[in-house]
Image (cartoon, rainbow, N blue to C red; front, side):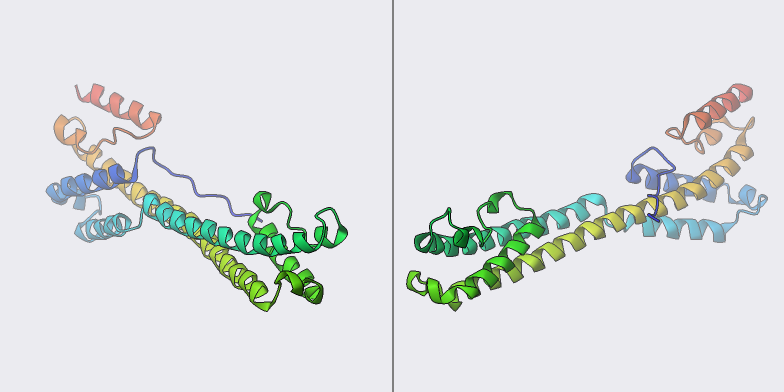
Length: 233
């Protein structure tokens, strides 16, 4: 069964989430004596701060996407090298066999530009196999193991490039999910901290109450904050 993707619990950027957390932690340090009356003490604040530091140091999606793009470019270059090696062979094959003959069509290399990565690798293996079966007939047009070795080497390099690029795609997916999970974890703790802070200062100090409000939280939270401020006024 396919794992469902993790959903964000907040609707603001990671950088803003981290700033909100740090601002709220500073406010809680200021009000620590009052927080301790709720069982929310210094040790829990330290643990929350550590979670925020760990979240801050995670690579963001721009970093992960950049790594993926670098390997994608390398894959394209490797694909170009492989296609060039196959085309060089097929130029020689075309000299020997008419392009409309079965001997030429057997190589299956007429649509290199339209092939997927998997199709290109499959084509390279087929071209090598078919060429070796007919190498005696193709010797007079310069087909030899050196020509085939170029294709074989290029195919291996391309396959490696494809695998590395796919690994980076997976790394990016994992990285995105990890940031969402850790972001949700610190958001949950932020909500707890802010609820304590608001309860402490409601109807007592509007400015301090406001310092615990999440302005970009969901609509229901906004309504609750406005209602609380109206009662405080």
